[in-house]
Length: 86
Image (tube, rainbow, N blue to C red; front, side, top):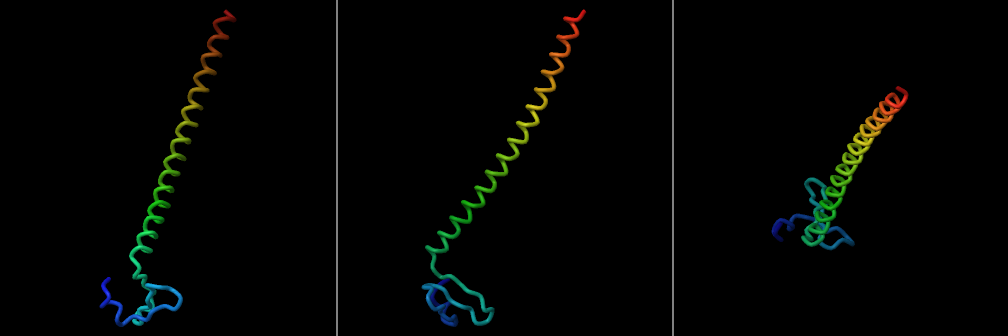
């Protein structure tokens, strides 16, 4: 936003670069560096959530594979016991 866009806006006390839009009553942050920091933080949190979900999926898959391996091992042991009994 350029400075002309803020001519009709009301500065917010105690917050540099913040303006209130009188028509919508919305607060607008005109400070680009603060906005950039916010977006970087937002994107970092979003990526952390994606990473966490990927790890949860991977752990679930590993648990399932371990269960399969355990079942196969039990079958092998049972088959070995049957062969030794004969």
